[in-house]
Length: 233
Image (cartoon, rainbow, N blue to C red; front, side, top):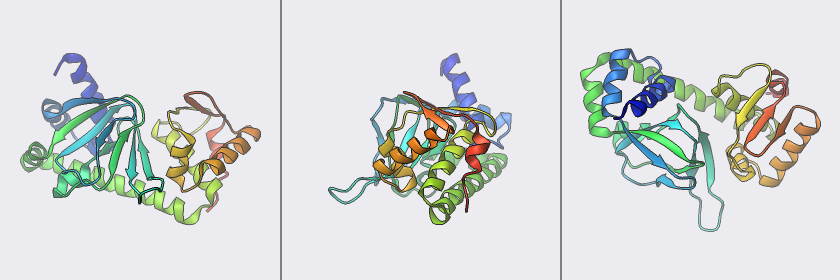
């Protein structure tokens, strides 16, 4: 791996919740075995049902997690993942086929680790195993939060909560948040269980209230705490 790629891989692994508890020795071992794959906007990383033979960590860009629907119906967008996030972790643990389709939302760089190599690493390093379990536990808690949103919040609340979570994933929990925004309104609607038209109206309402504005590739939230206060369970 070239020096620039090595640095990118280290930064991505340190930013990843999956390896947040890994020590430097484990990070060194991971950098040596991860490989870089790049995807164009709209390119499919893998399809639902493909063999689950690799773990992916996003170094840059974003991807959407899609559950294909019946013929003629819109696919469900389960999540949009950004830099530092990961996918393929379930399949790499149990060897089952991938449970969803992954599509690049924008040009993206990923770190790829094949299953056999991954299993060898965690067999040899108890510390890495513990770090992995901690990372998976954090991911389960995050997913539980999304399920709670869908169950307990109305559509305006789900939209506000999702924007607040996107800001938090970028490390912004107060003041103004400037969030990279490569998503279409249809993609955002799929993430919160709404329609494109309803999301369009809600974004316009939030803009009228002075809470945010949407530019070409940027969502600007003027006061993230004020937006968070609109979320009521």
